Length: 288
Ligand SMILES: Nc1nc2c(ncn2[C@@H]2O[C@H](COP(=O)(O)OP(=O)(O)O)[C@@H](O)[C@H]2O)c(=O)[nH]1
Ligand SMILES: [Mg+2]
Image (cartoon, rainbow, N blue to C red):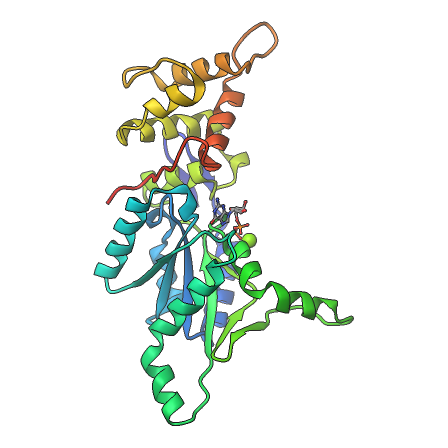
């Protein structure tokens, strides 16, 4: 399969995709719930409807990760949105210690009734959870945060073949120590661009000035184009062409190639990197 938008061309490998999906379906059978990690800068773009095949009807805990890169009001809107769909949704910053506790509490809330009933009957109930999400959403950071110590212990024992293992988070919850990598959904052009801007699609396969142009268009549609003036000391407005904006940024920041020409590729990468690290401010690419 080959997806081609104006600027985004993605080569798809169905064989690999099917293998990953099959493995996840297999692993998913023994899970009671799924921790679906979403990038808070574009939560809906991180969802691939295909993955119902892995999750089935089991409970999902949607996690708006990277909440530190998005304004609180946007986080609240998305939490409200998921709640209105009858879904559980929490927000966190996976790089902080508190994030583990937020996930554990969310799982306990989802299984509250069953946990209570089993406790009354004195029956042990272990909830098994799998962490999953598209690339770059923060799965490894979350798994390391949740399972760090236990993983280190397993790894230190000589001769232990590390495959998938369950890590005990507390007396009732175990999590698979290998996160499931879901493939992004490129059916929708806007989603694909959001994923390119946030880094869910490998930079090497995309022409970065095109991604930067999409980011500028996005800032324009969010009425946030002034951020570029503030950050780079340029003077642009909604009528300035995107490629010109990249040139202005490049000129200001000394992105010059031999012969004095502006290195648009470098200024594009600079803009994208600044966006991703939050240096342009807290920006959510999706509005609902
Ligand atoms: N600012 C911020 N960065 C994060 C957060 N969670 C993960 N990251 C960063 O996002 C990048 C991708 O994270 P990683 O855990 O490797 O994602 P994975 O591909 O889903 O396993 C890394 O550079 C992480 O440090 C977060 O909550 N906030
Ligand atoms: Mg990872």
